[in-house]
Image 1 (tube, rainbow, N blue to C red):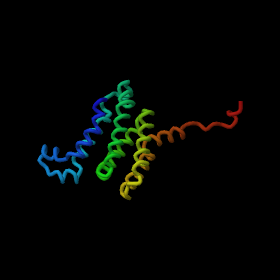
Image 2 (cartoon, one colour):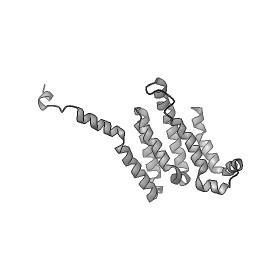
Image 3 (cartoon, rainbow, N blue to C red):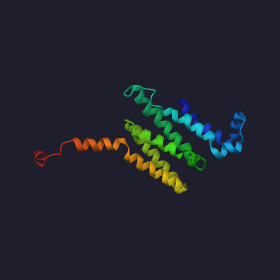
Image 4 (cartoon, rainbow, N blue to C red):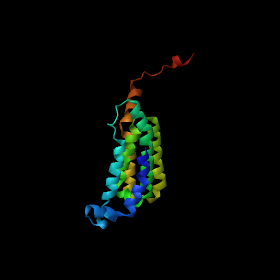
Length: 171
């Protein structure tokens, strides 16, 4: 849990001192800033927090992991994404939206609600800065979320249940 709180300092370091990473890997700092390699690497590490093979499907540890760790991690990731939106939007929007969608689709109400709030906050805080490409990506992901497995399961369940007869409503 404490490692999650290192997210912002790591992001600040990647933003403020790309030359450190260039020296380590002998690449040009300008190319690192342009192609976002370090941001992508940082977020790939962060997204591993959500790796769902760590715990059995219905274990207590998995429920706690989703409710506490995933919840806090996603909130911080969205905060950092918002802070560095001008750099990250073009290179990581799709990956972030995919992670939010995964969290929303989990069988954990608290994580789903928190993820929905994160998505709403991301869009309301940054929507005015989005260009057409960002809005297209955002809208496509929202449509994808609506078309995903969870709503269809609920729809199928409604179709299988028997309709209520009017005379059963009167007591």
